[in-house]
Length: 249
Image (cartoon, rainbow, N blue to C red):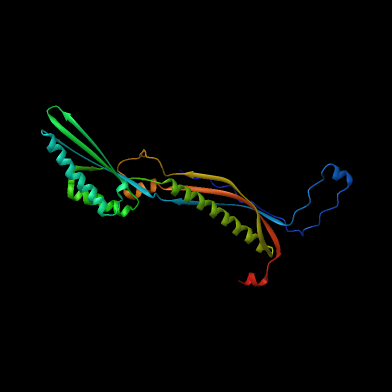
């Protein structure tokens, strides 16, 4: 989804010397009068845009067996289940990141045992190693789903904070450059307001995206990448003439 062109940045600077508050007439005092003029200020708006790749991947491994004897069906599935779990554990996948579901049925005169192992990876290199090993050792006796990439809520919150901080930093840098243009020194911030935030792309839920099954690994990661933009408005104090020594630095 293409991002619309951002609104033009706005820069307003008041460089006239600060004036002492004017004395109010009794009539003005009676109705409140105009506010006293503030010191010199620079008003700036700025924005930033950042992206973050997915930090989790979920892979489902399905397997089953259909035998005339119940014990034989269970045994066939159990052996492969134990191998899958052991292979993932040996490659650093925590036990809490693996979920096993089993289903046992009687089908006509046979017994059918089906199982599924759902594995969540935070290291995509380990994910590829585990999947490649299972394909090599177990072959067609297991079915491995394409990885589903997504973001944890913590990763999304981090992206939101980072893009806001980046927008504030860009705004301050712009205000500093404006002040230097007029030989002034930037002072403390008087106001910082977040005006607009936008997020698009990526997905955080447990549902698979409506995308073709024949995407490459990199294409899946790209489709799951999240983007965020932020625009802020800030008012900074103008301190006065820029220090010559700081200017040389």
